[in-house]
Length: 193
Picture 1 (cartoon, rainbow, N blue to C red):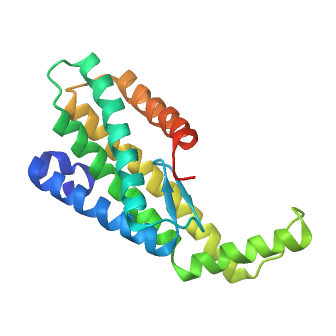
Picture 2: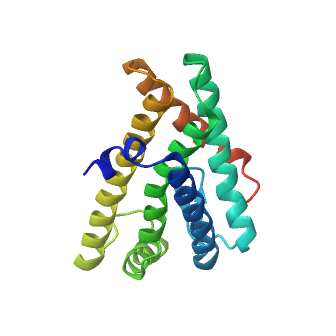
Picture 3: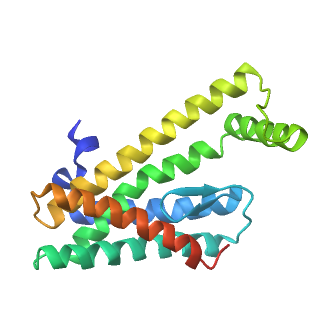
């Protein structure tokens, strides 16, 4: 159970780094193959064609920029914070978002999203009429995505508190605000859209 609640205390930093980098590369390949862009840390965009190296570069920009931003904050709070610890926290917490990307590309989810898009194109934004299967799929997918986002922030906060040796609840709020703010800004700075 501790593997899911606090992997930072169980696994060696080398293992966390290897797992994080391997899954980031695999996610870049999945992103390229399925034409889904993991845009910043909090958004997935469909029908965004990209070459495999562009997808990997996009994920690398997201990961490194989040790592640098959180590292600067952590160093301001605790001088002995190590870059590799913050990098591992960012890499491991993003594993949850890679799962979200994989769920987004499932045919069942894509069919439901396409049905909504077609209804809106056909009838405008008035209440679209969807089949029960599509409604259940979208509601279930929405609940899973919201849960995954909460879990992403949970891992991020737990890992950062360990990396920067913090017991402060204010740090939790600052970490969340920083990640939200930076990942909103990165959407305007991203060269891939």
